Image (tube, rainbow, N blue to C red; front, side, top):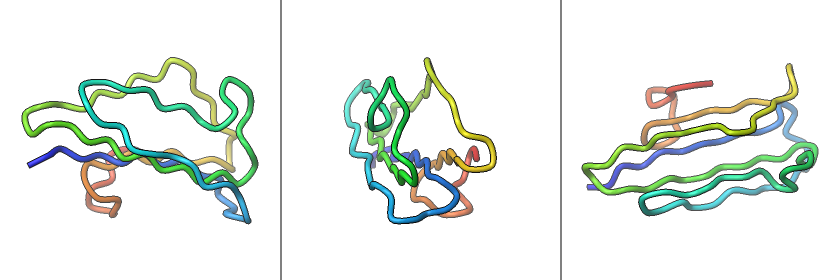
Length: 89
């Protein structure tokens, strides 16, 4: 069995924005928003899937992090992206 986590960030108003994200596998990886280190596009809807081995843990470290208050959301799930698996919003 694999450990799966989802990280999603999006603008609250999901207009016709850019979809982004991807798959991160293995012992480590890096997740960056489109355009990093500059601002990301309006209405970006990004989802990353993190997969690691059964006996491994997923540790998230944020080195640079900024959200626009009242507009941006970051959600972290342990497993499939459903309410019961929501760890942080």
